[in-house]
Length: 381
Image 1: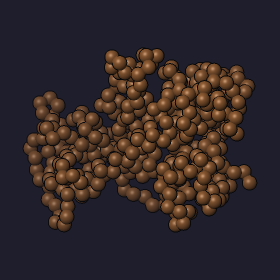
Image 2: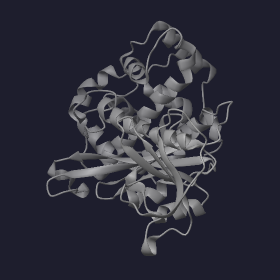
Image 3: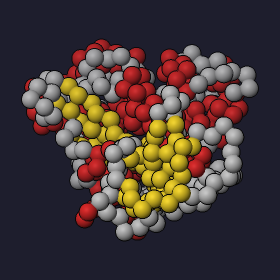
Image 4: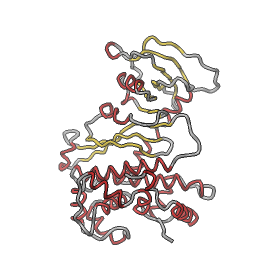
């Protein structure tokens, strides 16, 4: 049986060699290496994300234990990470998302599909990261992310240095072909220009605003009597002041969190209950868990290279690892969850360590045999 027990094998379900070659041509990359090519580099990053390696030297010592990678020295790894355009790996990441989304279509359809928008900052002190200067003594990159709250995976990631703030990059995150998408953001994404632009584009949003945010001409909305509700107010209002005042009225929902603090969100959703809108906003915590999980369990904060290209190559290679693990968990869980209670963290750790229960392994192999290739989902690249 052709067993699937490594992330590179799982990646091959979605991305064919033809895909790799066509993307390389798109970015003008010509492969000259015979022993360790750019496909090996992508496989290397997906494996390195699951190990506790401190850098290329430690990776070199452990390559003999990786059946899917050739044995090369640390200088070869470093040179490859520096020379292969990271945009090529980012394109693989984006194609993987596209194909996963098509394979994850469900028989049921919810009216709205929720997407959280947020960013995470990765900081480092080494002086050789001067291209990512953040403060006088620190350097940083920032990953601006749109996160699919149904499938628990990113649908878009935009990489910048740490000085590019959320509000500057946000318009690029609010692009989605699904008219039922709802973008959910924290206070860093609140601006009257954002509200007006999203509304004009017929994009739905639920975005938190600060307590001091100006709201005028308020009108309370009629509400049904709901027992044990956490809703404080449900109203419409004009937002902002002066030249930044909105032309349209927007809905304001104020509710209390678990600690009794008031949270106020602005939205253009008028056909949902206030309780549903509050629930939508609270679901955004999943993107924060995603950032924390990737940093802690896929070692995203442990950077191997120092060039901009090497850093972003590792970042997108790491995110590819997350996508593969999450997809496998989502797709096989229903078959073994009645016997084994494994959350995503337990599942991914045991998959990486090859210690999953035999019944779970058997289900993964069955799944692999019945879905040998998913690269056809997108047709011709």
